[in-house]
Length: 203
Image 1 (cartoon, rainbow, N blue to C red):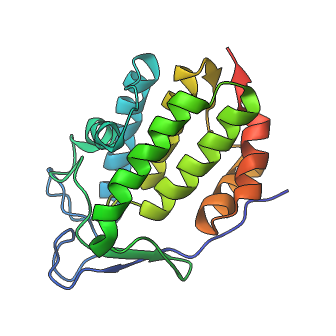
Image 2: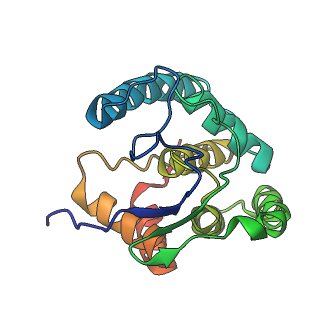
């Protein structure tokens, strides 16, 4: 099938809140200025934390728990882990929610997650709820870095709370990768539904 390519992120960050001056490298706790080395360091540390979450997931009942997951994954390398981004972001020409609207997104997503817990019981209901949450969480894109890894863990945790396995494994499976990326980048709920049809499995 092959793996589709997507344009990178664009950030409005004139004051270098997150990056070293005249660099695209994220300011990190190790003060690693080399982009490739910094990325490799981040990958190793977050992968290690992900394994811990796999064994002991954080239950998700609202946005505060999403912040906890991000903090758990990234606190070893970024001082802003678990904090909302302070810059605006776009990807492939599609803008994510502007930071000026976060105050409306937080209670909306909280209600969406609460409705999922209260009203989603059958597989199709759970799948629909996960599609809506993933779509909205991705548009929210609350963090400067690590949104994808965080949202995939959020979805896994929510599914587990309903007695299902739902691991969005994008490492080697091109079909899963393309469905996930098309669904999230372009806000395509049909693609996301197709994704969950394939990976949502009763425990």
